[in-house]
Figure 1 (cartoon, rainbow, N blue to C red):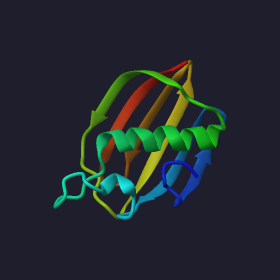
Figure 2: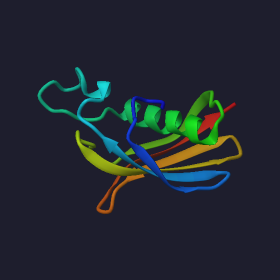
Figure 3: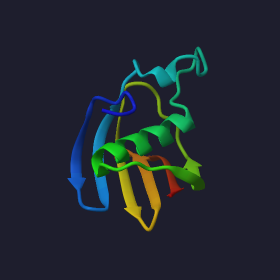
Figure 4: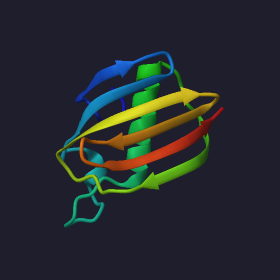
Length: 112
C-alpha cells in the first residue's frame, strides 16, 4: 500500500469516488520530528495520504500541478480513526478527512 497506511478498508467505491476508513497510527513516519512533544499529523502528510490512497484505489497516477483549495480545520492526533473521502472528476481530485464528530481537512488538487 501507499503512504505507509497499511490499515484502511474501503467503505464505498465507484468509478469516480471512494470512502475509506483508516487508522492514523502513532508509528507513521509523519509524526517523527513534527512538534517533538506534541504529536500532530502534518498538513502535507494529509494531502500525501489522500493522493497516495487515490493512486492505489483509482489505479492511476496523479501528477498534481496545482493546489486549488486546502483547508485544515481540526488537528489529527496519533491513533485516530478517520474517514477519507475522495472524488475524481475533470482533472480535479477532491478529498475530505472527517469522523463522526468533526471534519479535519479538505482540499481540491488539479492534476495533469
